[in-house]
Image (tube, rainbow, N blue to C red):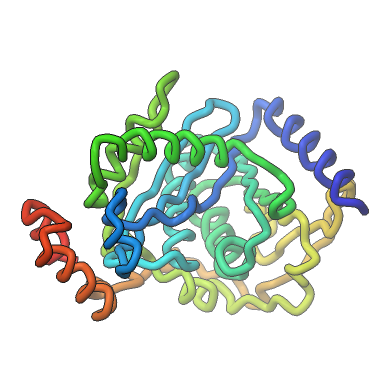
Amino acid sequence: MKITCMKKICQEMKKKDKEDMNVFVAVYDLQAVMQLPKGDVSAFYYKSKLNVFNFTIYDIKTNKCQCFVWDEANGRRGVNELCTCVLQYIKNLSTTEDAEIIFYSDNCAGQQKNKFMIAMYLYAVRYLGIKSITHKYLIKGHTQNEGDSAHSLIERETKRMLKSGPIYTTEGFVSIIRSAKKRGDPFNVNELCFEDFLDLKILANDIGPLNMADLKLSLVKTIRVQRESPNSVFYKTAYADEKFKEAIVIKKKMQAKAISLNKAFHTKPGIPANKRADINDLIKKKLIPNFYKPFYDNL
């Protein structure tokens, strides 16, 4: 099927989901990395800088956006970090009885299209009161979504703020996100540290282990997990498919007690030595004001 045809089907599918009053529908994505310090200082371009991440989950019905922000001293941008953000979002929705959720995202295997995210979804329908979670993977690079519009507003506000001078800290970036949306509800920011992140890679083994042999994720366009079939993943390999196929990914019986979730980090990950050296050099040369030295010393 041609890209233009698949793109049209995706748009129609999302419009239909948005009109369904019985489900929550959200798009999630990781914004392009913000590097600090950021500003029009030539020396900044030749130094290793601090990476700051913003993972957004955008409710396409209410136009409310949750932003999960952390820097690389507290976490990376891998499965554990992104799964933790989505799990936090799901927990907030689980206060609604028998909630049904539809997520949209791109096709990035390393971040959201993998067995670890599926394990987290299975955990949610087993233990958090969620009735079902459906995840529809958009065509990477060809399907613009509401999350992109949120990122665009943040990037626009960043450019505006840079006219007043450089941005030095994660908190400065958080302030930009909070002020980026001028109409309607502002973006809600969840600031995360290393203690917040959970080890969802271990969960994939504890809840299963998952047997993915019958589920070729590279070909999958939609997946669904549901409370009434807690050992299965239902999937479609084409956007136009009417019926789901079933893959039994857990062979053992469901545990009677809820599985405990472990911390991903026991200590703060910190930043590489070469990056710390470059940042200290910028401080020494007064290109980062001493006012911000405690922030960088604490990375």
